[in-house]
Length: 198
Length: 314
Image (cartoon, rainbow over all chains, first blue to last red; front, top):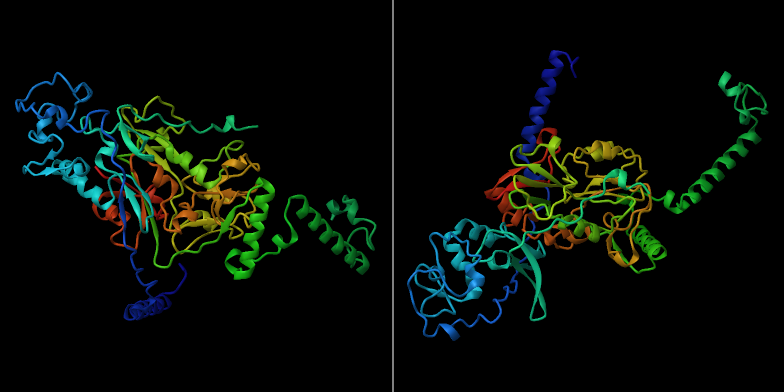
């Protein structure tokens, strides 16, 4: 191409211009028509189970209604790991005083434990929006149809929400995911080339 | 001419120096001998004449393709003693696959590596083949291959000060591996997946040196794949067991993704760092990533234009 003489180059340029304007006039060269979207069916994974013997809360909390913020002398399992902005939060910021079997939004509205994501979404709105559209969190199934999504509490322990690890558990005969307090152990490293020689 | 003289096979003809026209009978004899040698050479490396004279995958008629698939199923049965279902599902019109990997989430647990091995029937040992390689990098250095560690071992991940960068086939729009293949045994499908026809691959490994991501792997032997671990749902261009001497690579789990399913690595990821979907669908998960997150492609300066995107969701 370097040796093309100037008039020929000009001719080629003109031809190229003509070709490009012709292509612009005919949008018929578009690839495939946009594909019709399959309806997205979302299935909620089973929420991880409560700690054993803890629910329903009202069995014990019928008469215990002290609203004063304090270090709890019971609920060791939660108290010992509590690391959810511990300086500023405590139980009754999320749990309802009158009905301990429910969670309480900032607005005062009560939500059941199965909809805990609404509670989380109050503060973690960015993650909540990402999760709703499938950018945050794991999904299993079809990219093109039915998929199962996990809940916030499937991977994050609400009392110590920084992600550490998850494990598969069985709830009512079905496997689902629950958060752990131990970090994940990586699986075996790949073999080095020298280890692969027979 | 002097070197010709030293070849005894060329001597004893009409002209020992090879200057005159060879005897026609001798020529016919040589032709037959050459054909015979070719057939026996093919037979000795396990290739039948039918396979050798087969048309390119893209030129196969429906019937021819069915025959080829049946042959692969028979080979599987002979080799593993198990029934398998081998398909050649074509690309879905209007779909272009895109893959997103959230580097801010990946913890380097390698669950994806082994889910991939299990799904895609890689050789487990001798050679051990992993289509996904998770690199451990220093947060202080960023994406720096000179200081990346593939063989990290730890009791718990992520390790402090480290981040993890899994690398697999980037399904380039401008794939160097396809350009260098001398036999057109590898090509890019309309949905973006770069595939390999293992029956067409001659094992020259040009594509491996062409790939800047180290995403292609060679079967130095028939490998070890226990029959009970064989995944019977197979795609001709994907996870069917590979013979010795061919190159293989990630296909976005073509046997799953073309049926609408997530690839195995996407489903297994415990932190949900892997996203997959149709780039042409503005509502898809991958498009949401592209629209709202900071996205990068690996080795952008090489202009390979990957269909695999890394992103930061935090």
